[in-house]
Image 1: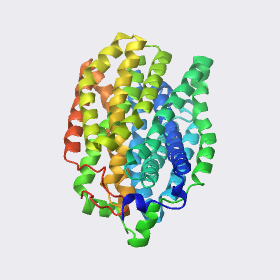
Image 2: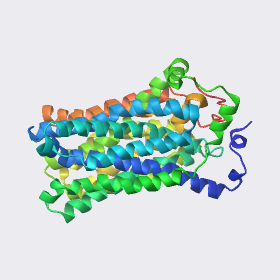
Image 3: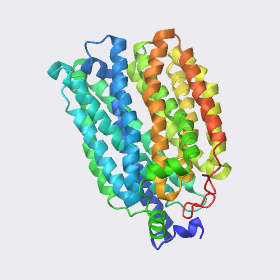
Image 4: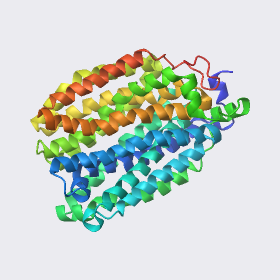
Amino acid sequence: MTEHAAVRSPEVAKPPVRAARIAVASFIGTAIEFYDFYIYGTAAALVFGKLFFPTFSSLAGTLAAFATFGVGFVARPVGAVVFGHFGDRIGRKRMLVVSLLTMGTGTVAIGVLPTFSAIGIGAPILLVLCRFLQGFGLGGEWGGAVLLATEYAPKGKRGLWSSFPQIGPAIGFIVASGAFLVLSNSLSDADFQSWGWRVPFLASAVLIVIGYYIRMKIAETPVFEKAMREQEKAKAPIVEVIKKQPRTLALSTVAFILAHTLFYTITTFSLSYGTSELKLDRNMLLICTMIAAAVMGLATPALAVYSDRVGRRAVCIASAVLAAVWAFPLFALLHTGNPVLIAIALSVGLIAFAALFGPMGAFLPELFATRYRYTGASVAYNASSIVGGGVSPILATQLIASTGSSASVSLYVIVIAVLCAVCVYFLRETRSVDLATDAGLHR
């Protein structure tokens, strides 16, 4: 049976309706959950050091705030294993709803947390716990969202369909940055530090209700339902992934460290570095990152569709090459202080990110068998985020402090880019894999 036939049903007979429904359902959750994740990153760069670690020096406070930011990345693989386990056993849809509510609970809770001045050491401890809950929920979100899209996708269009949830991070980042931009311009520094930073966290509650309603309206993916009819459920999906596809899991995990490294170096770290070290205007940097994120949002689906034509590997390797070439110009342009040049610097960097992130929505699910696909794709994606997203901002901050030069950060990005290119080279091309039968699957 062909993949196209496997996903055909009475509902699929109306592609525009189906495409719109799946696009919204897969996109809405990633947009909301990455909004939640990014408002934390922005707050960590701008205010958390002073509010939750006031006894530290400015540098130590920033490092401590980024360390709590990193806790979310440590939690993500844990969430990937847990949500992947149940997603591979009872279905994608249920886990997408639970992951959304889990993430939202952690985010809203941060919005009501007392600071260090109110309860002392309890404040950063509670912040870490909420951050862990955020990461745990997001660990299950991405894998379920891309599987929803790819397992519904018609033949030859998995790159396009998988780009629906991949656009979510760009929208989430723009909305998160925009929220902080409006608040910082509308409020005095004292009011922003006192209560203004809480508003984006509390506003997440409204977005979660909308996302919950939309996700409850979707059906389980036909590929998963077919697999459950014809195969025995995986008793322990994570064990099967490690036993049956260890090479694929290792290569894909290391390969996609670059995606997280690029994004969080260009956004979270650059925002902190630009304001604290280069003394650049915070609002100007926020606007530049929003412009770059908009460019990324346009580039992501375009490059995902291109990977349907030329293959996933070619586009991903091109991303690594661009990232390595742009590593030094990125910071050279940032140092100019010129808003136009800074926007260009960040935009090109996020185009390199999009060239990897766009195809990745289809590439990772295509690498793993249906019975443990949720687990395999989620673990690879989220485990790579520990280094790329959790460690990179901390390491970059420490490298700048130790060397006094951004060259050390550029060299770090180049090393990660080379690792990505090598790992992708050794992964098999997957655009022709049949998700319904796992035919042609690389093990």
